[in-house]
Length: 292
Image (spheres, rainbow, N blue to C red):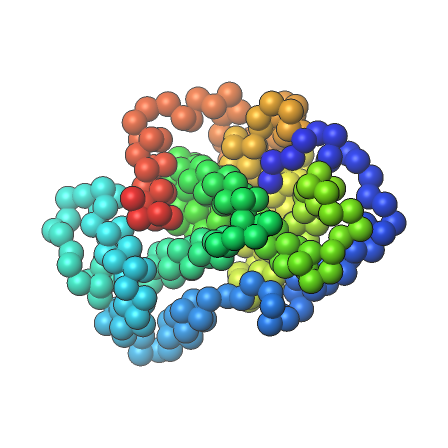
């Protein structure tokens, strides 16, 4: 999440600290007014856990959402599957991509829909936040392919959910106004609480621990821990690469001091971006998120 340097270091008031503690607890409470895991994802998980799950059976479920079904077929026919015969049926698309990739792809598409707010005070903020989230997710996908340390579609999904904690915090703000509702103060609260809130929400959604760790620790860019899944390091690098603009606190950090680059054997100088392969990977990530 991009934020100004002064807002990172600004202390919270006691009232803000108390509000944030309540908001984080609310994020993992499963309350009905919280963002919920889409029903299609829940049913897909259940179906994939059955011993007799087949591409045809999964296609019947995924195809209940025509837009998502079409997206899966489009990805199966994308440049990343070049050389193979065109596919027109959803069950064959699922067979080509594999269950795990389809699960992550469909989950990612469903998660992107949670960022859609038709109107209201949160709409403009969420549109900006979603654009930034997509950029981090695309970067993570390309880094996954470049480093070969994580499955790219899994890295893409991790990018889509890394800042998911913003959603329950905004939901709580609509339910219980923060002590200071000015934009700068709210942004500071969102930054300071989104990692804990995101981890709590993903745990409530029963996401794998790797994604929970990504949500909880992607802002710990100087962490030296070695006992984490590479997915965490991929998201740290993607976060740094995307959110290091002028005036941001990440922009003032020397990339050579970020251990995740070294652990992934990635050049902090950005040399990995060269060549047409990188652009193709970013394009493939956009196809998976936007269908274009």
